Image (cartoon, rainbow, N blue to C red; front, side):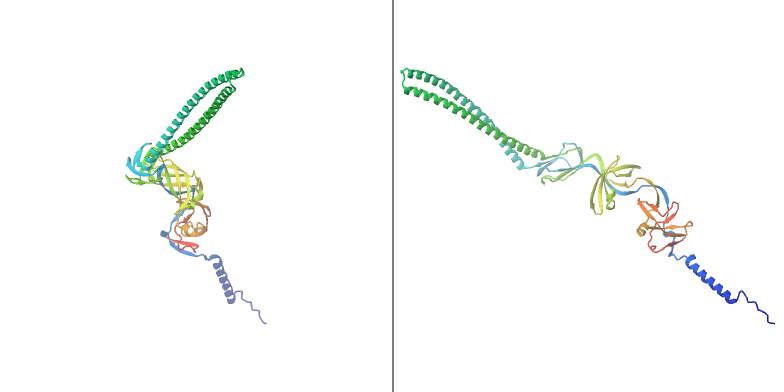
Length: 415
């Protein structure tokens, strides 16, 4: 009788098949799940800079170099030209308002003054002579009228007597007509004399008025030349420091030439250069601070000059200037671009030049590895960046240069 043989469950072939399948599955899992395919780089800890991610007060500001200058500077220009005749003061001395700095000489102005003065005096004499002539003519004309009135009265009486005698046949008609003609002639002469008086009066008054107008013009011209002569004396318009005098004895100075400079010592301003990148964010009234002798002082932008020169523009700041600060002194001003707030921050570093602030290497807890992470940077100060996204307080980041790390995803830290 045949006996049924029982088949083995774990044959060699089956075991080999199962082991092979398991090996393939493990390989697949290792490659796609367990194996780290990220680009790695070993770095020594001494060659990197590690900083903490913190949260605290943050205020954006930029440091700008400033120079202390007088709050007001007066430039003295020559109002008239001439040769330097005498210098009364040199640069570097304090002056009072009205102090004479130098004297110019201008022969042509002196001749003009004499000419205008002569013209003015001549017109004054002409006006006086015209007034005298007018008065004399008036007296003469009045005397003629008075004489004519007497003659007319006499001629009238003679005419009336002659007319009566002619009517009485005592006088001839010719005698009557002669008397009548004499009377009428005297009346006509009187009328003509009065018209002549009126004409002479109007003519003389017109001439006098014209001379008066010419005199006013001449006097104005004389005053102008006189002021120009006074302008030959260059004087200080304010109290202050006469910093420079750009003139020497005998030097020819043209009209409009800057002769001297006076600094008002009642206050100072700070002139500072700002990078053109910040031009849209700078405005009048923006506050800055600086340190001096252990104290902090506040300044405020008074003027903004938007003209760009060598990538920079100029601002003027005024405010607290303590004793001891001198003209020309250099100050480092912290110009505040934002209000103080709480923010997550990381140290500034060279990594930004490579990443543009878009990503950074973040260390693990035991600081043996650093992994690339996307972040978002906001404002900045000379020491810190504001982090808007991607980091939490307490984490650590590498903020030194990323040269050679551009294509790496993970850094292995070697201590």
